[in-house]
Image (cartoon, rainbow, N blue to C red):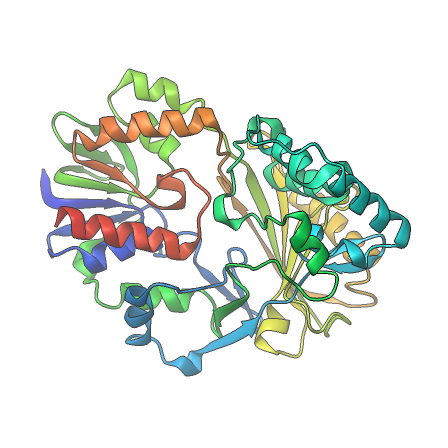
Amino acid sequence: MDKVKYLIIGGGVSGLAFANFVESEDYLILEKENELGGYCRTIYQDGFVWDFAGHFFHFATDTLKRFFQERIDTKELVEREKVTKIYFDDNYVDFPFQSNIHQLPKDKFIECLYDLYFREDKTEYNSFLDMLYSKFGKAITEYFLKPYNEKLYACDLDSLDVDAMGRFFPYANLDQVVSSFKKQSVSSYNATFLYPKNGAKVFVDALSKSIPERNVALNEQLLSIDLDKKTAITNLREIKYEYLINSMPLKALMKSVNRNDLNMLAENLTYNKVLVFNLGFDKKSSLKDVHWLYFPQKEINFYRVGFYDNILKTDRLSMYVEIGYNPFEEVNIDEQLSKTLECLKSTGIITDHKLVSSCSIIMDPAYVHVSERSNQIKRNALLVLAEHQVYSIGRYGDWKYCSIEDSMTDAIELAKEIS
């Protein structure tokens, strides 16, 4: 039986960050794929650079800024001021919708402003959807906030917690909305962002740089954990550990341990999955200054698209397209690709463009559903696991909506705490 002090499940940014900052070389990273990075992997195909989905970086903490500055040449990065828009009524409205209603046709602008002014706000909300109606009124909610988030999360918004998106939701009160008529007044956590010229893999490579090959096991998947014996069984072997650091989905971790109560509770954690198309065309789109676009319309199959070529200033349209699904839905990739191309044409993003390269990825899970129930389950599960020196971190390990930087910061704090 192999032995290790820190057994790290998952070679994404959370697991890699922990390995970089833990004060020990006695660790092993188990990664079920054939390369590190998790969802922060990059595809190089036919001259195009694509990530598994749209990843944009905003490093606010000094620790991470210094870490990457020491390992990445700034010439490898571009910094952009974010330009994001919403496709609405065959036109484009600046994001976020609620602070740019003055850009709508006059009748809809008046309707949104009227409903916002006379909304019945309250101090407590029953759900995410209840919060939307209470804070923004009927028109803003039903024109954009409700249909867009239903497409994104692929669930009933009444089932989500009020703070399902945490600080990432662009709140705006009446004063801010009115102020935005003249000048944008709703701040954003990512008003500017960094992006590597060679894709998100650049950051993964920086995280992997100081990790010896002997400390990484690729193509090895966790199957089960005995919490009392502190042993993990993989598809290849049995491993004795002192601490287990998990970054795979909390739902999967709970199902893998030898505790019936956690196995059963795991069934109550829900999420969506996302089909991502990376598409390369023979020429640019007429939309040359937009970084990503949002689509609330039900007749359009995707909820968001992003433009790598506009970020990197390349000469061919290079984009990602995201389509949300319930996890139990079947995904017909050929059918969705055909529909995607039709919708790209109907919205004017492409005209007579020729698709010269493409690939598809299914992110499963993609966005976890944060609810009062899921938060309670998580709290209980993490307490039980911590009693056995098992810690679960990151966007999926901690079952929350957070940024890449948040995931790495959580991992660094845990590494310092238990070193």
